[in-house]
Amino acid sequence: MDIFPGRFTRVPDGPLLAASIFNTAELNYRELAKWNLNSSVLGFHEDVLVEKTKSVMSASSKSTKISETATVRANRRRPTYSAKLLKAVSDEESVESSSDTDEETATAKDIRLNKILQYRKSLTKIVKVKTAIFHEKVRVTCSKDGKCIEWYKVKASEDDENKRQLIGTLPVSKITNFKTKVDNLRYLEITAGNNSYLFMFKTRDEREQWQCEFDSFIRFMKMI
Image: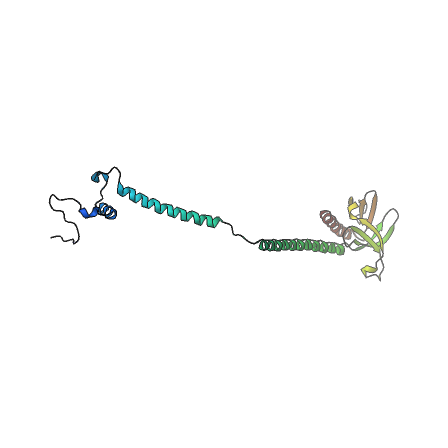
C-alpha cells in the first residue's frame, strides 16, 4: 500500500515516469525537476530544464536592469523651471549681491573715516611752525579727509572748529621725510620736496608722542 497518496507507484519492469507527465510542457518540466534529470537520461541534445531556467532568469534580469536604468535616468534629469522663475531668482541674487557689496563698501568707508577722526584728535596740538617765510604758534591737526596736515591761528575764544582760521596746509602725499633735529630733540623737521617745515614742541615727550601718532597716520594714509 502506498503511504503517499497521489504519488505514482512504479510496477516491476514498468516505466520510470508516469505517462501523464508528458501531456503538457509544464508537467514535463515540473516532474523532471523533481527527479533532477538532464538531457543524458532523456536523450536530448541540450538541457531543456537548464535552458528554460536560464531564459526565465535572463528575462527577470533584463526587466530589473531596464527598471534601474529608467530610475537612474529619471534621477539624472534636471528639473525644469519657467523662464520667469529663473529670471526672478537671478534678479533676487543680483540684488542681494549688490546689497552685500554696498554694505561692505559703506562699512570700509566708515572705518576709514572713523580712523581719520581718531588721528585728527590725537594730532591736534598747539606748536610753533617755522618755514622759510612763516614762524608762528598755531594749532596743528590733520584735515577731515586725512589728505593734509593743517594749522590754524590760535585764539582762546575759538573753541568752535568751524570758526578757526586756516593759515597753512601740507599735503600728506608730498611728504618725503620727517626726523628729529639732532641739536634740539623738541623739534621735528618735516620735508616735502624742496620745502621743510619745523614743528617745535614744548617738551621732548610731547614731540615723541606726536611724532609716533604722525608716523602711524602717514602709514595709514599710504595704505588707502
